Each structure stands twice: as structure tokens, then as C-alpha cells.
Length: 447
Image 1: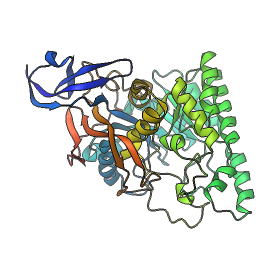
Image 2 (image 1 turned 90 degrees about the vertical axis):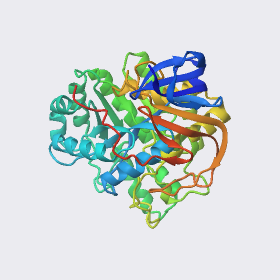
Image 3 (image 1 turned 60 degrees about the vertical axis):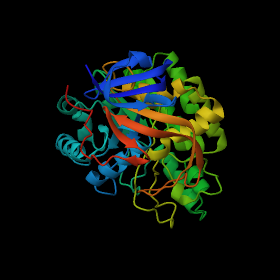
Image 4 (image 1 turned 120 degrees about the vertical axis):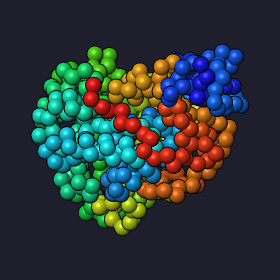
């Protein structure tokens, strides 16, 4: 039977192997893979010209609809993601109302009416009722991933309700008995960071380094240790999000050796930027903060030795930052269009990161951690045809024209996506994203 799409003459790279050939797609699903002469006829045939074909990036960490209207963000930001080789995004999303059930129904419907690529949800625990509602949420929505936030003082500029250890412990006791259940935690000691913040404010400093020094690395290390203790005590799977300290992957590896189910995420900015970079100011404020070169190198150790499990951008398109007061500035940057290129440039080209390892942290591992396997995360028969074609030798300069704050403007990177295919449809090619908004589907759905 004729395929809808065939990509051939490619260097096909998966999480555990690579070969020269291609894939065939029908009805949005991969129906064949292998040598070129084994692929069927197709309505559209794409000669990859020897370029790298990888599974589409799954970005498991972003925040949309925070400042700009949610439907608008689901159009503009999923298009930006597609331009960066991303085929699925998972939103860490917060709701201050007692129940997540109406919230899910609304956000899923609006997302499916506007998104260019597939999307799903993790839910933030923002009040005690959310802990008690976890079993009902899982049954009604299919969402099995929840998040607790430390490190935010009560009057923080983006309105996050900081967690208590009680919330964490109670949520863990529930999630340990839910297949696929996982608790993500933002690890920073809230009380120590708040105390040090007030000391730093008294100095009058407004530089980016002052923010980092007001919540030093040991604040994160302490909370990681505490969360690992609770995970070991309860038997609950734990995911350490946006880890910014080199000890994070080390502590997680030690805990895994004891049988703890823990995974570590870091972000591209912690692998490429420090708080003392001369061209950065308070507008590069991120939570947790950018750190120094020692922490950056520690995270690269984890990337190269396998102790970092996955990558996420923590992409958040805030209104343009004012650059007036470090302590009231909203923390967060945007990275969708460059997340893959940053890792090709700084990881593959500069540090020898194997492409198969990049596929693991970008696609295979997040798919397995968050219930998307075996639909997504690999190039194999029966999987969604989520693919990105990459030119490893292409050099382009980052030019940010969209929402939010970019901390890479003007950088020349080597290695860029040239085509993105999401569920069998080309959503990015010739330097432009498709405008077929509303084709994306929610991937966190009731069983």
C-alpha cells in the first residue's frame, strides 16, 4: 500500500542505534523503517541528502498562558517549538481553584483548538485540596504527573504558592500506588533563600550574580537531599526538574543505587550560561538561577555519563522584562526555537555528546517517564511519525523575534533543524512553521 510520506537517504539516529535509510509514514504513524530500497512508494518523497533524522524533541517542561492569553500562546509558542524540532510539549500548569477537573477540560479544549503540535499537562499542587484530588484527577484526565514548588517566597512576582513538606509527603503516599505516577519538585530551600534575599536586598545590588548569591547552590542541594529522603521513605517516583547544580545528578545516581526511582532534568541555559556572563543583566533572571562555571561543568558531567535523564527548556513567554528591579523581575526565558541547536553546538560538536545520547535526553527518556511510550520517543513501526531532520553542519545566528526574553541573541550555532514532522505532517520547512493551528492533540487523556 502506498505511504503518505517517505523520508529516505538519511542518517537515522534513535536512542540505541543508527542506520542509513529512512522511514515510511501512513495516517500519521511510522509503518516502515529501514534501507532505502525497502521503503514503499509514497505521495510525497523527501530525499534527506544524508542529513540526520531523529525522533522529534519532546520538551517536558514549559509554561504557556502565564502572561499572554493561553490560546494565543498555544499558537505562537507551539509554532516556535516546531521550528526548533519539537513535536510534543508538556506544560507545567497551575490552577488556584480547588479543583483541576474543570480547568483540565477548558485547557485541553482550547489547546486542541490552537496548538500546532501535540501537548500535555503536569499539574501544580497549589493548595491542600489538590493533594486530595489526585486520584480523581488521574481517573478523569489521565494526568499522572504533579509538581510541588519550593524556593518561592509568599510574595513572589509570579504568584506561585510554595509547597510544604506535608504536601510533598502526602502526594507521594498517593502517587506511589498510581501506575505511572510521578512527583516533580522544584528544589530550593524556601526559608533559607528568603532570608538571604533580604540580606542581599540590603546591599543595594541589582546585578544578576546577586540573585544567584541570594539563593546559593547549597539551597538546592539541601532540598534535593530532603526530597530523595521522602521518595525513599514512601517509594514514590521522583523527578527533579530544572536542576541547576552539579551535585543533583550525583545525588540522584547514589539514590538510584539504593533503589530510589528518581530522574534528573536540566535545562539548556544551565549548560550554556552562567550568572557572571558579562552580557547578561537582571533580565536573565531564572528560577532556579543561572550559576557559576563549576556547576555548569558538573551538569555536563551528568549529561555525558548518563546521570542527567532529560532536558527541558522551562520556556515561559513573559511580557517584556522591565530591567528595573532585580527582586521584582519575573524569572524565566524562552528557548523553544534553539533548544536542539544549543545541544548540537555545545554538546555534539564541542563536547562529543553522541547523537544517540541526545535522543535519549530529548525524546526517549521523557516519553518513558511521562507515559507517552510506546507512542512517542522513538523511530519505530507503530510510533507516531514525530521526526526532525537536522543539518549538523549548518551555521545560523540566533535572532529572537517572538515573545519573552532570549539569552542567546546574536549567538552563531552549528547544527540546525531543517524540517519537523509531527504525526506525519510537515509542520516546519524552508525556515517557516506551518499555520495549521488546531492540529495538535492532547496526549494526557483518560485511560
